[in-house]
Length: 156
Image (cartoon, rainbow, N blue to C red; front, side, top):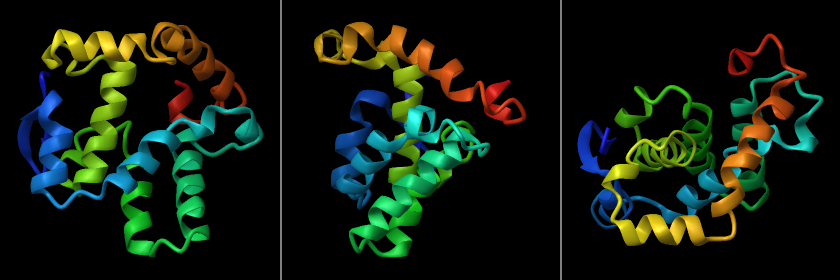
């Protein structure tokens, strides 16, 4: 699990973003929107939605991009990256932004690829403002964000 797949090719996790930006025609702004939007569906604003939180996240990111005049085909890559992140087998074969949102979520939440990161990178991430308390907050956010969605596959 020390690598992510970009367009079907394994890439060491700590090389994925630089490689994708320089070699695979990755749009770093789309990746950024996908990364910052991927857990919006767990927030208070979406606590009345019965929709899977991944879809609530994806729809909100697409609306954000559309409101800023981003073309639908570019916004679709963000939507796919967010909506499909819980099914990592699919995004590996899609656009780099889609694959990397999934890889980032896997690293953040599940630690997939953590062992491939250099120690100084791991230390910098843990020292960042979200680092030390992220685990505790995300463990609280999941049940709070899913409690009102008992039929959602995300809640099981």
